[in-house]
Length: 546
Image (cartoon, rainbow, N blue to C red; front, side):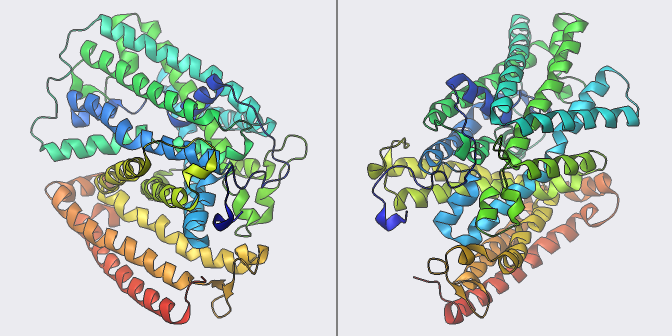
């Protein structure tokens, strides 16, 4: 249904024939979201030592308000309005056109396919903290995890949900134990100090935000199975409860750990949540908690397979990638080929150092979350809330400002303070979208092949009408980010950056702080020039279809 003819209700329902619908109870939805988005507070430990104990606690409250809740709200509303798999691709395509939809879908799929193996590696690392593992045994355990959760996902979403429920209960019990034991042995002032001494306040805030935002990512995972949820009206309530549950499961164990176990500078180095139990209860309790840490990583990995393997379904239906990526098994209605491909990719990645992949792909997620907020604002205008008769965020224009403004503020800060290496290499993945889009459009036909009248192409470029102008906007936007960001990073990291990157990397581009800044700055200039050229050429010879 076109937005001009919209009279109410859901749109794009049942766009994937053969997709099996699963009914979620409220607890099942909460537990699935928890496993997909958090899987416990692992990772917060490094916030304490890098930002200070007091600031860590403050950020664990502020970040959900400015980042997690807005994302959860727009995912809940859009999944009710447009209940499809791979929602971010579909939402962005509907809001801003085929090119931007491809870019967002491509980025998200790439990130999910190439970084999911990290959870398997972490799980086996936790096992290695309990018992010594040879490289061969470690790989066999990694392979076993991959095979087990591949089989679970091949069976269907219901089985994934059941396993998530079991995992979530175990994780929550473990962190509740840390909170109770830690708070019962309160000896330290959690706000002494608030921030790391000897560093400026902005640096402490920046580092804490960069880590904290990662702890509150993942809420769009529900959008990747939106077409398989039989009762999407359960999503908003489940999302809100889950965000509160995640916040409490981060905040209370962290508070219990800080007040009972010190020194705080050792957190993430020689002290972690298991230490709280081993010191204040018994050594066996610490070992039991490490087993829960393995389960936590498995829970996230299990959910990540589910979301990643749905990412290409609507893109394949729109002729922007191979059709076999959208093929579903007739019996269970799951994407068998993508699940098997992902298993092979994970088996390869757990054997190599894929830190560079994570560095390249991580910054893209900040762009995605912020961009989806603006797609939400556009779709809210195109499909008025008063016509829908569905769940929608209350508050009118103020709600839209909050949902766009919070992630924009936090996203900009996170993109910049993650590090010059992340900032620079993130553009590799960002620019890949503008390279692969025309290739996929030329090979597979895109939306024009699906409906030539609704999605006309420019016969000279064989791309959608107006795409040259869209490329121009793309280059202008990210050219400005690269150029302006280089000056910020020079100020933010200039005092310690050269020595840090040289010590960390030893040689190569990432070891040379000044070279990275120069590449970002002059690369930004090149992108700005390309942006101007493409934009004005597009206006002249490739106007967008009205």
